[in-house]
Image 1 (cartoon, one colour):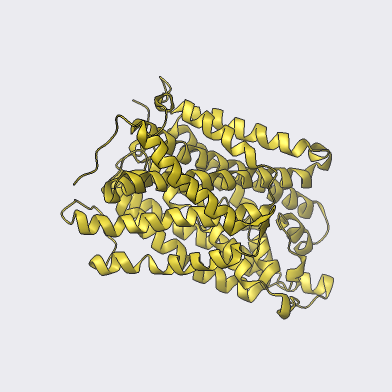
Image 2 (cartoon, rainbow, N blue to C red; image 1 turned 120 degrees about the vertical axis):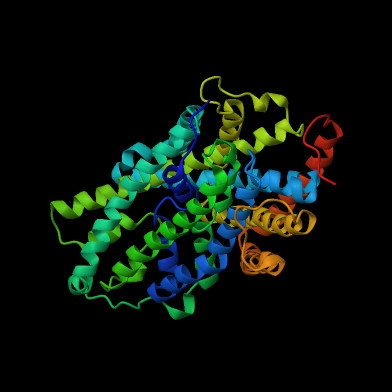
Amino acid sequence: MPRKVTLLPLIAAIYLMVSGGPFGLEDIVSKTGYAATILILLVTPIVWAIPTALMVSELSSTLPDEGGMYVWAFRAMGPFWGFQESWLSLVGSIFDMAIYPTLFVGYLGHLAPSLTAGGRGIWIGVALIGVCAVWNVAGAKVVGGSSFVMTVLLLAPFAVLSGYAVFHRETAAVLQSIPLHNVDAHNVDMLGGILVAMWNFMGWDNASTIAGEVDRPQRTYPLAMAGAVTLVAVTYLLPVAAIAMTGLDPNRWSTGGWADVSRAILPRGFTRESLAVAITIGGMLGAVGTLNALTLSLSRLPYAMAEDGFLPKVLTTRHSKTGAPWVAILVCAAAWALCLNFSFTKLILLDVLLTGLSILLEFASLVALRVREPALPRPYRVPGGLFGAVAVGVPPLALLVLTVVRNQAEPVGPINALQLGGILVSLGVVSYFLSNRFRKTGRSHPS
């Protein structure tokens, strides 16, 4: 039997699935300024991350099956909604998984611009997806262990930078004489900042798909969720708050710009350049770690759907030694490579919209299971009975309404991101009826 994932590697894997470090927060600072960024980073976990983590903790410990959220929706609401849950997660993943090679190439370009010049960045991204696919064939235990190591390495430079900033608050202000609040109040993009924060706090459900490969999942998942939520919140807030104390102009922040921020804070010398390089390497590690951890998670969805007859049975083929569904991993990797040329903003908006809809289905599954199967053993329960199960999904729903509003303003070719999202959702309905026509085997829905 393949070795199973234990608590600390699972926390690290969840951390990478959700976060991958403070990278990506730069856009929130540049859009809104420090005060608003800190407020957003305090509020978003409360209304988005914690409700989702509570829901995932209950459902993962109640139904610890391979396929995770697909199994929840299938069990709670039937095969149609199970299929839509997987469809939205997988289609959303096509946009999500293109973000991390894009970030990797961006950070690599900071270190060695010649390596990514002339269109080579796209091929580096394709190669990175291929490496993570092969890595995942080695099995969940290997991915979990490597996730722990990468999490420690990528966070170490931020601990150094935050510590220096706290004890040298005046450095940036003295060196540059730039006021703290220099963001134009008329151009503050609060909604854009909130959407970036939602993306930075999204992905708690991804760990559910590997429940069959987790040691004592009924006990491990709730503990891992609590640990990961705390780790994500702390590693986001502390570096931003520490830099804010120095007086560095928020307009100096840009996508992938943590290394430039460190150069602005530290005095000239070997230490400054060494830390900037370490942060850049940390960004590359974060991108690789997140891509690798999400490959572990998302490849289990087509595997579970193939077991139920919705997809070709070849996707259920497992590696004889590691137990990894290697055919599903390779097919997913090929699909993810298709969106590597999209812009960062478009990728985030489409990912938040589609993945957000799949999360709403998971909250609906939580409530439906409470109603349909009240006696189902639940090692962990969302507090508050049925009312609590309903109420916990209200704040994420409100944020997703904001996502719909923002997607209307983002063009994607001749249409906007909301229209493209609607087309992709509709394709999921059509695909279900086409695949269900030929479906002969699979799990049955409890009546």
